[in-house]
Amino acid sequence: MRSLLRTVPKNDNSVMIYDDDPNTAHILLRLTPSITPIGTIRGVKIAKADSTYYKLSRLAVLKEYRKFSFGRALVETFHDWTRADALKSLPDGSDPASATATIACHSQIPVKGFYSSVIPHDLYTPRNLKS
Image 1 (cartoon, rainbow, N blue to C red):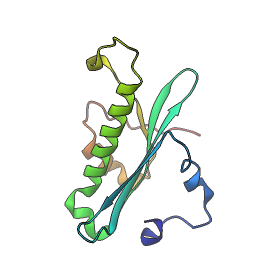
Image 2: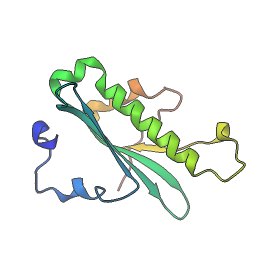
Image 3: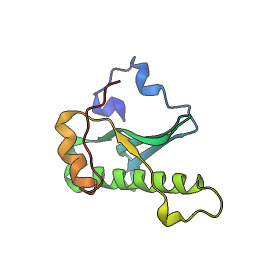
């Protein structure tokens, strides 16, 4: 997918940092029946001593397919994965309706409008996070 998009140099190892992590989900969207990959998204569960959050990263849809809302479908699938994983982590006897999960989204400025359109406005809080 990356070679089709030509956005990340092949020698950029920062892209691969989560690839072998069992807390990572790679979601690939393919056309049928050709199974041609047209979009992808990566999600990572980041568990720290004092908090756990999910990181949405590496969302990409080939340009000629962007008008079909496949980016939205990938984000919704990522949310489904996050929800399922967060529910698995609840202590026994907990009320699933009271569960919450924090999602961090690292993106470039040109796609802020996209994310604000696929995330409910009462849940979307854009921030500039310093590394």
